[in-house]
Length: 110
Image (cartoon, rainbow, N blue to C red; front, side, top):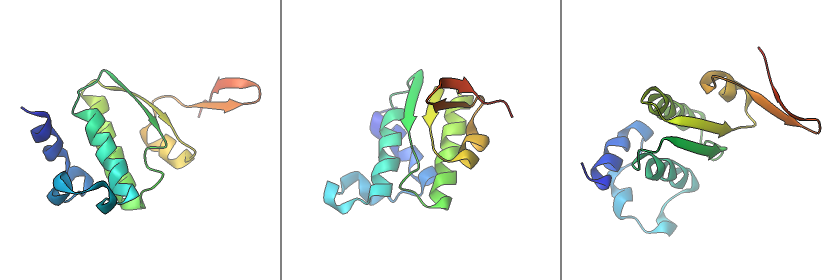
């Protein structure tokens, strides 16, 4: 399967219209760019992805869509390191939770 075909298969999961495949950058919203960046990473089928605030520009519905796509990637064996300031998001998607403070990095035990 081509990269384009793999990418197009993710469009419905992230509520992206097919027309974005041919859109100029200035025609794409910041939230759409954020979801397209995730697709771009996932089509490479990486072993590991580092995500820094992957849903910061998204509304709650789009955030949940991204989290579902990330959960599926995790189930398929992709490792994820997600940086988030949203404790609810961390609770929904994390297997482990670490906090960074002036004292360093420490695991947060629930």
